[in-house]
Each structure stands twice: as structure tokens, then as C-alpha cells.
Length: 414
Figure 1 (spheres, one colour):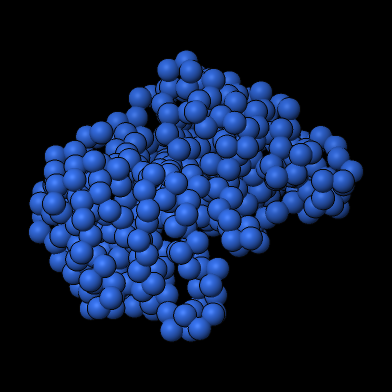
Figure 2: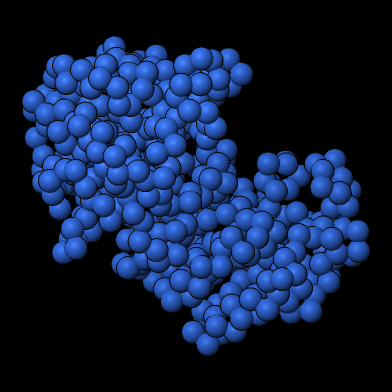
């Protein structure tokens, strides 16, 4: 498999699939450009070599097709709102194609000179994109001479621009971008090369969202810390009283099964011994600390308690590899943020002591950023759903489309 550092883009038009699905405010201004900045090294490599960059991305989840958009529907999903910001970051003008496959856009792409950048309209304005349509993919492929996939956040989608398009490029003319490569290398490091002890921190609302990742982690982790709303399903499964805490009653047997499998495999499951409970789902609710398996009726656990924080912290600080996916509580509310904040700080501390830490999932990443610890962990994944599926042991179509059957995962070329 060709790596991006091996390839010289001089005089080539590179069709680059990125994930520029960034948030906008009411004035259609970008409020967080993390995903755009993450793809800059790949684009800059192409331009520095003397190539031209044709950038395609999805943007939101529009329901309209391109024709209705041009008549004014769902303009907020047009990638033209990204032009000015991208131009500033790359320090050059950005050309724009208001579609992805007309004769006009083909000419714009064909006439690009070295160092020039063309941004295509939102690929999801075409229903063919999400269907993985072959003809649409082939049309996209005509725009470039080399294909670079740098959109890990969409790697689990078998869409035309992330997967099918790669079929129309020779093996030596398709590759991962720097971001995609880093995502794969770091995920593989945790999955297959983790230094022990390996601790997985899994949080969030529902056990059902994390079933497959938990089952896969039972084969590779030494310790699994479980927090967030999903913890109360485990407590109820063991006969605990959880008040009106979040619970999935149809997953109680599954929770019991996971606990049993962990015991059989010698994996230590750590549940929060105490919780910060509230009498209402509100930052202004009445609050008290209680044992997590003995929460009174009318009360709900919204954060892990001080004893749980201490216990979890000890495990984290003894770890050599840490995977974190999901918050410990409703950290968006200040009265229930201490658990997630402290765990984030302990992950950063363990990292400074030599552990390797990978943070993935939208809420975990948001927490790391909120507490200003993003530069104190080893790697932050840009792909929530994609990373989750990767750690569930699934093959991601966007990655498989670039790899040959005999390929090894790259060890990093940057």
C-alpha cells in the first residue's frame, strides 16, 4: 500500500476526501474548526509537492437534493460556507464548484494548476452518495488522478466518496492521508500492541451502544472502568436499587453475561461504588451522594461519587495503556461534571507518567477539550462512530477500500 509520504504529487490532481462536517452558528460561521485543521497536513503535502487539491466532504445531513438547494433550500449545508475559513488556513484562494459532477466542475478540476485548491459542493446533496452508487463514484473519480482518503470519521460508511471511488484508482494512486493513517496506526497500537496493564474506560448512557466494544475489550483489556448512565443497568442486574436512574431493562441479562465473561477471562470490571444523585434532571436539582446500588426512589445517579473517583483514579494511574470512550456523568451540567473532569485529569497524569492514551467518541473528546487537556493525552480520535466500530472488531469499508488484501497497517510515515 502506498503511503502519502512515499508519493510525490507534483503535477498530479489529488482528489482528497476529508471530513469538514464542522458546526456553524446562526450566522453560518464555523464555531469549531478542529476537523478542518486536522486535514491541513495532508492538503499541504499535496500543494508543497507541486500538486493540485480537489477537496470533497459531506456537511451535515441535508434532506434536499442539489437542484432544490440551488433554489434556496437548506443553504446552511452548502460547503461554500467553508471557503473563506479554509482559504485563511491554507493562505491561498479557494475555487468552488457548486456541484460534484457537472461539465463545469470537471473543467474546473481539469484546469487546476499546481498549488491551487478546488472545494466541491456537499457530497450529500446527492442521494447517490449515501447509497454507495457506482456511477456517482466513477464520476467523482474523473476529477482527480490520485485518491487520498483522510476522512476517518466517515470510514465506517460505504459511501461513494469514501469507499466506492477508490475502485477507480490504481493501487499506487490511492492512499490514506496523514490523519487517516494516524487514526489507524494508533487504534492498531491499542488493539494489538497495548502495553499492559491496559485499562478501558467506557461511559455514556446506554449499554446497548457499547455491547460489541465491551465484548471485544474483554479479550484485550486488564481492567474495564464503567461509568455514566450505563452503569446503573449493571447495578440493577445484580439486584441493586437505582431509583429512577437511567436503565435498560431489556439488557439486564446481557449485563449479567458481560460480568460473568469478565470473571471467566480474569478481566476486572470496575463499577462506581457511589454516585452523585439528584431528584431531577437539572443542574439546579437537589443533590446528595449515595451508594450506587442503593439509590432512593425519585432520585437518579448523574455522576460518579468521590469514592468511585478515588478507586477509578488508582486504576488509571497504574495503567500503561488507556482507552477512553464515554463520559462518567452528565458533564455538561457543572454540578455533575466532577467525575468526568477528574478522570480526564488522571488520564492526562498517567500519560505524563509514560502511559499511552487514546481518547475517542464525541463526548469524551468534548470533555478533554472542555477541560483543556487535549495536548496532554497521546491521541484524540476524530471519528466517534468509526472508532467505536474499529474497536468492536469490524472492518471499516473506507479503510478496506485503500488496503490490498496483503497489506500491513502502515506504521506511520509522517
